[in-house]
Image (tube, rainbow, N blue to C red):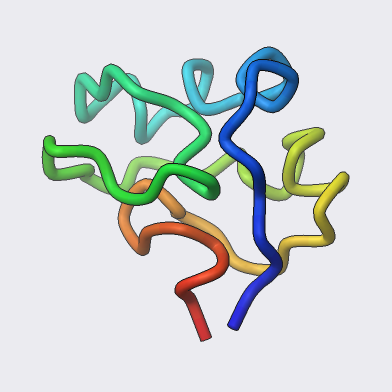
Length: 76
């Protein structure tokens, strides 16, 4: 299992999801998918900024496309 990421205001402010190509291509409306899990909309891979995200670095995450995989804590 991955590291747990709190769903809080600080992480929302640090999150790069809204600038991600996949986010834009898929018209996603949420963010901090590593904390919240998959959005209701189906994400279409178009590039992933997760490794560049301050939240990713802060919580030592090691996966990509949390918008497609779900919460970091749920990913093996």
